[in-house]
Image (cartoon, rainbow, N blue to C red; front, side, top):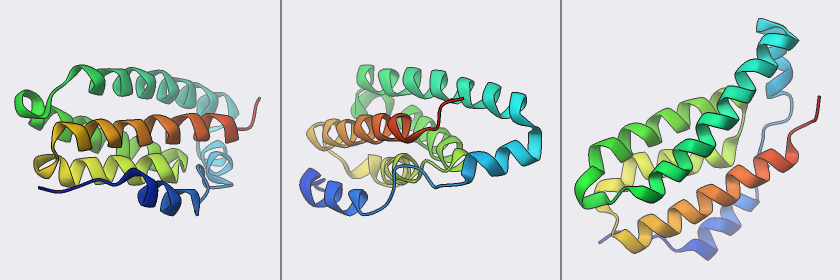
Length: 125
């Protein structure tokens, strides 16, 4: 069985910023301030819902959906430069079939923390 050890993984993730500086500005240049703000707001709403959804799913019954949702989250988080969240979503996508429920729940805790850290680092405006 694959084990997720939260403490070493968290230390490794803490070594990188929760969000890539400048990622939002790149998006603004591509689609404008209003468009970037609107898309970012949708991202936050969908990500919050997705993280809550993960809490209702079990690996044994919903493995394919968990992998699909993790893939979507990884892509969306990467678009906005939320590197920790994207890395954790990638980890879930690639290892979901090897995780036990406890390891899955530990990974969700780390994803929640990465989401909170990204929100905290997000510039207001």
